[in-house]
Amino acid sequence: MASHSNQQEEQRVFVIRHGERIDHVDYSWVGKSDRPYDPPLTEQGVREAKDAGCMLKERDIVINTVISSPFLRCLQTAQHICDGLQLPGIMTCNGIVDVLTPSFGILQQPVVPADNIAELGIKVLTFHQEPIPTFPEYFRDGMKRYSAEINKLADEHWPKNIVIVTHMFCVTQAIALTGDQVSFTDYCGYVEMSRSSKQKYDWKKVKTFGIEE
Picture 1 (cartoon, rainbow, N blue to C red):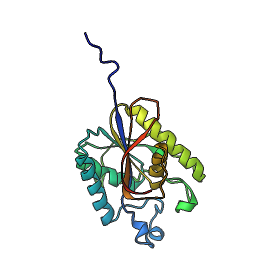
Picture 2 (tube, rainbow, N blue to C red; picture 1 turned 45 degrees about the vertical axis):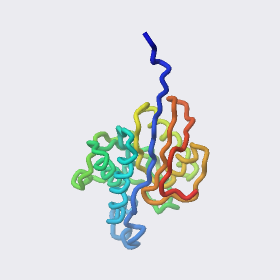
Picture 3 (cartoon, rainbow, N blue to C red; picture 1 turned 180 degrees about the vertical axis):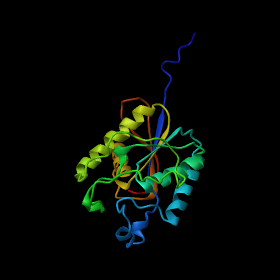
Picture 4 (cartoon, rainbow, N blue to C red; picture 1 turned 135 degrees about the vertical axis):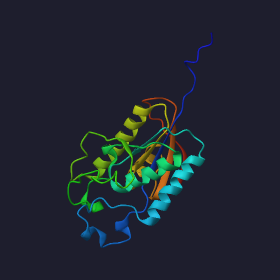
């Protein structure tokens, strides 16, 4: 009988930034919020997230799981992507939160996710139980964290294809794992990466969208 043990496997990982956040449009929002580190999407951000779900659906690749940072803007984006892919809900990962530095406007230890996410129509299947990183965090430590978390999530779901919904510099670091560098990632910009062996991080860049290289 022929053996299939050497059959080539491939995993695709999509690392995508959230949609437009309200505090980058309404500068007074932070002063009015009791969660200034956790802005929601704007209406434009919602449209971007829905478009991202449609684009990923059009890739005609079976995507099994959507994993999101627990910040609200990411959870909202992830839910619209789930809707586009007709998936039942989201898993959260606390290791892919934004870099917790005052340089990014984070001035206190965040408490995430928000209590009312179910009321917002966000369906979380599994909440990550490990604590989020400790504030404040050095930028370089956040970038190292992103590399480790992307590889860890890919290993946990091997060989299934996954979407990781996160923050701009996590997308930047994902592209760095493929050997390239970028200067900017637009809202809902993403990189599609592939590899052919578990626990060997020879990532190849398949496709990018909204990326300035």
